[in-house]
Structure formats: structure tokens, C-alpha cells
Image 1: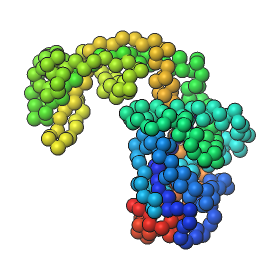
Image 2: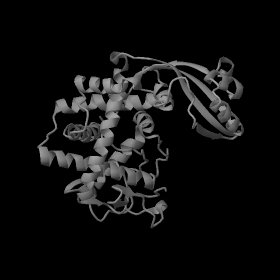
Image 3: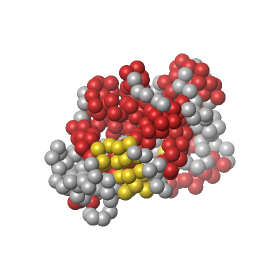
Length: 351
């Protein structure tokens, strides 16, 4: 599993930069350092590999600036935080568990990371030009090794957390059994209701009108003619995660009493989604989603644990990249001097 960070892809000034850092280290954690030259080389990789950028954009819901002459100050600060987190976990597992990297560990980490990228793109409905594994293959070897080393260290760190779910057959199947209804094949009905009709919808709902009746009377969606019926979705569907998010925890055959809202140029609409039927999905058919869910669960646990480590870590971030804030365990974007001209990190930094 990729290390638990929010990646922000940024643009690089170029190989030659104006000004010099006071120190040759961009970031340091408990004595482990990342040099300024390596930091800027990493930014260059992110800027110059659109195939990888496609997946990272899906993973973090961001895109590059597309400007070869500047990178954002926010991006510099975020990437600095990413490196702080990576250095921190590598330093910890090496010192406390005598962990070492190996070719076998890197190969396993590569496969997991490629899967993470592909799953992120699929979940966001993003179609990238190449496969995730091919996008990784196009990157410089040193960059991939650095990222996979930190990813592998994070995997090992998670394996030492008592509350984490092992990514083994037994661990995954046990998680599925405990949350089996979360993987049901779900048939759904929807109703998209203008906010002006929200009170009338709620009154009819309270009076006991069925899902189909409510959809026919109030929904402006094309499915209204069919009682809101929108089809059935199983774990293999690219839309399943979105559908599940709407119906999880809600009773079958009923719209929720508290709808979601969506504001558009034509007005505000209330979004109702109800599961009209559920069918148990065998583990084999849900395995990929179970794996992703366990990763997300472990990621949340690991993030909390890593933040606890960072709370006591000796962290240094070059001032030209941002300011380390111990309370929030993040690197804050520079505000003064103006972010359009931060010295040292590059010419023409953007806010």
C-alpha cells in the first residue's frame, strides 16, 4: 500500500535555480535528510511525466499547473510534508525494528502501489493513457525506488500496529465476513428533487408514500417514469463505491429522510438514493474492493500513529519550502514573503 499521504503534483522551475538554500537539506527528520537537489529533482519528475501525473491526479484529486517555469508554493509545501512523513516512517522502522529493504520487498511494494494508482483512477472515473504499471516503468529508477522504499516501510509499520487488519487471505476474508452487507449487490432508485419541493416531498414521505411513488411525483430525473429505478450495482461496477456511499446504513426500500444537496447554475436540488433490493455477493466477487477497504482502514490507523510519532520527532524544513507546524503535523505554505517570489526554492513560485 502506498504510504499514507495526500500527493500534490507540482511544477518545477527547471534544473537550474536562482538563489541558494542556507542548508543543503530540504527536509530532515530525526537526522534523516533529503537534499535540496533531490527534492527539486523529484518535483521535476512529477512535472515531466504526464502518464504518472494522471494517476497521481486521480489519487489526490489534483493536477499539475502545466507551467514549466514555476511550481506552486502550496505544492512545494505539500511535497515537503510528504517527504517528512516518508523519512519519519523509514527512520522509525529502521531504528526500532531493524527493518531493511530488499529487492523482493520493492517488487511487492511496486505491485501494491500500481494497484493503488489503478484503483484510484477507476474510483474517480479517470481514464489514463497507459496502465499504472507502465506509468511507473516510465519514471526514473531512483525516483521509483525512493517512493517504493517509503511505501514498503509504511506497509511494515502498519503490520506492527495491533489494530491493523493483515493483508492476508484470512485477514481479508475475516473483514469481509464482519462487513458482509457492505458488499451486497444493490438495486437502487433515485429521486432528484428541486429544493422548492423539498417540504412537499418530506410530507409525502412521512405519510408513507413508497419510493416509486415519491420518485414519480417529485423527481425531475429521467428515471421518474420508472419509479426512480436506476439499475443494480455490484462490487465490480466502477460506480459501486459512489452508490454504496449513498445507501450504506440506510434501510432497504426507503429514501433517507436527510437528502444530499447539489447546487447548480439552474438551482439547488435534493438527491435521494434508496436501495430497493440487496443480494449477497460472494467474497471472491468482492475481493478487490475488500482489499481496497482494508487498505483504507489501515491507512487511517497508520495516519494517526504516524502523526503521534511526528508529534515528538525532530523535524526541520527549509524555510524556502514552507513552515513545519507541529500541532497539525504538516508543512504550511509560505505567506511572507509573497509566494510568487520565494527565494531559494525557485524562481516564480505560485500561490
